Amino acid sequence: MTRVVIQIPEATPVALGLNPERLGDALLLAAAVQWFESGRLSSGAAAELAGLPKPVFMERLGDFGVPVFRQTAEELREEFANA
Image 1 (cartoon, helix red, strand yellow):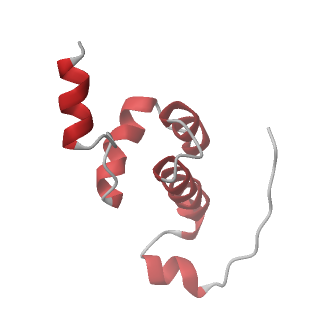
Image 2 (image 1 turned 45 degrees about the vertical axis):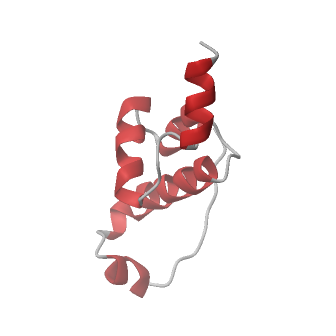
C-alpha cells in the first residue's frame, strides 16, 4: 500500500466538523466519491480506496448527492427495449 503524507491547516477539521483523527478517512472518501463521479474509478475501486465495502460506499454516495447509476432515462429505455 502506498503511503501519502499531506499537511492540512489546523482549522480544516474544525471547519468540517471532524475529529482530526478521522480527517484522513474523510479525505479518502471524498477523493473516492469524486473520482467515481468523474468516471476515473469504478465503484469497486472507489470503495477500496475509501476503505469501505462496496455496498456501504454506494450508500454513502447519497451523502454527497452523487447518483449510483449514471444512465439517463432514455438510455434506460433503450436498454430495456433491447433486453
